[in-house]
Length: 565
Image 1: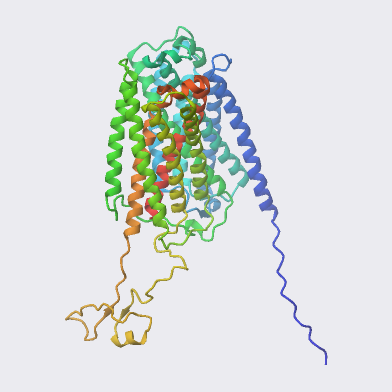
Image 2 (image 1 turned 90 degrees about the horizontal axis):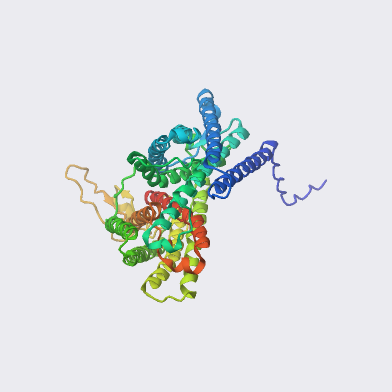
């Protein structure tokens, strides 16, 4: 009688090898990123070279490159839209997390303001058409067409998981993303030069004038010395499109983030088609629903006060009465109060999450990963400015009220960014309402159950001995219906919604101030005296755009936190 072999330990099957499609997926991503890096470096070289008068690179060269990039990106978008219309199987899956309605709504809002800016810019350059290159007028017209086409494309296709022409789609999306980043860089450099030039010409800062006069700036604009903006209409157009630059900057960044998520979703397989996989996309959003109204009211109050402080600051800094000191004291005092409250509120939100029983969402989510990376990366800009200010104040010699306010402002700015990032990131990783952690078991498992037989209660030892009984209806059956009511513990959700709305409104006013021209970094001469104008201007002009973007990105993230709370 033969012995049966003793079964050994079950061997784990070998992991499946990555097929050629997966290998080329990584290769296609790598090549598309390399293309984007090279094109972006070329655009960065021309944009930065055109910002200096001693470099023989003019705005016409920058406009020519950006126009060519926008035309190529527009051609690819048209190709994609036509291909998707003819091939229904090109997009078998849709990512429910990508392109939420508030992000697309913000894109439409900023895109509309960008179109108005293009109208003003066209009117400005048309005022002296006879003495300049035609590319200066052609550029805003091409940009308007590109903005309209791209906004429609992102509105209808932001959730697509593309599954045809994968490598071509990756190259097209990454090139379009690079085009938006190049436009963003050009707008940031142009606005920084305008702000620095306005600072050098202000009456209170004549001793720190380092910039060229209007006549010396004309070659950098591609204009002849005979060109001058002398008419009233030309002045209106010039001031108008400079005030609309913040919206153009935010539009380019919003579009870049949505294009990056689409690029990550190329070839992605989801568990359920057409966006029915994991995710939490609320059906209806009511702004002040289930709140205590304390957060919105306090946030609106700070928003109105901030607008008043901003107007007072701009008026006092630009006049010759020497009232810059009072304007800076009001500016720093408001920021200290606002940042202090935001820090405390963010910290309280993180404490509330310690009592939240919702499970952490561990599913793969490219949109959330990008949001976290942008929050952490953009905060580095404000961190850098704050630490430079701290060193200048601590090491410098002046010891007055203004330096003390400047130091407190820098410290609170660091604390506010840190605690707000912790609150937002933890909120984005929480599951939707009702998704409780498996470790958090309810104390009373019979809550919410309805019994038609009263005797059934005595057979369940886990139920409370004295349940709350529902009063039987006279028209009902003789058997009484017993309902064990579930306690409504909505206070945590209401507090989180109040916190989200308060932080949202505060971030809006903190975006408005620097985006529309508030530059206390130059009006307060502590850092200028310590580092020198050239170094301090370089630090501010490089880091501040990231700080401005952080505020608007925090607004969109906090709106999502409000909806998910």
